[in-house]
Length: 207
Image 1 (cartoon, rainbow, N blue to C red):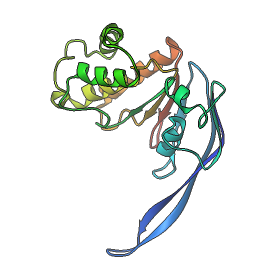
Image 2: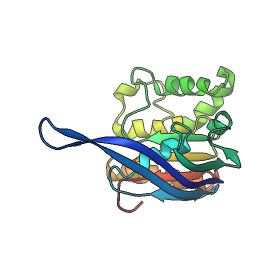
Image 3: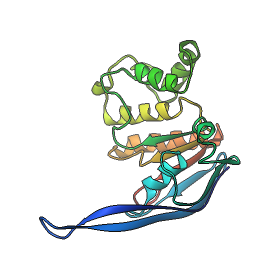
Image 4: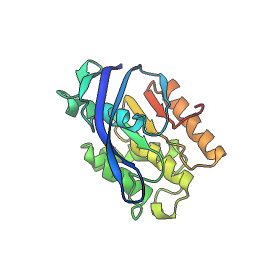
């Protein structure tokens, strides 16, 4: 289980007052939440409310100024290296992929960052490509993919380390309704069948 208690991150924003004037604004993002295995938790809020900041803290990419985060009893700061093996993040849009590499080459690259050997990755990557429906396009450069195909590859990339907990930061951003529905169904399957704890972030509206 992931348990976040009283976590707060303080950061500064630049607020425009005109064409040439700006002022700094101090913002605090704070939240309490828990995520169990096999559970999907929605994270909603207006722009600037701190949703992406929260995901980065849960992913060990940012350190909270206050509060505590435990992942299966491990502390997010003291045990960051151990926690990274059990979590992953999927961003919306077309970030976190190397366009000149093929889908398979992207997964090999990210898999080796987690310490997997080429032999270990072979079957894992084939299974992931099949899961997201890219088994026939694995050797095509990502720059030739549609938005929907790129986002499906994002899911495969986020699963490369077989994380227990998955954080999705607007994964359906810019996608057509049928593609977005397919991705949401994949997420439900990961929670129900694979018992992964999932945090699903959106800017607003229903999941």
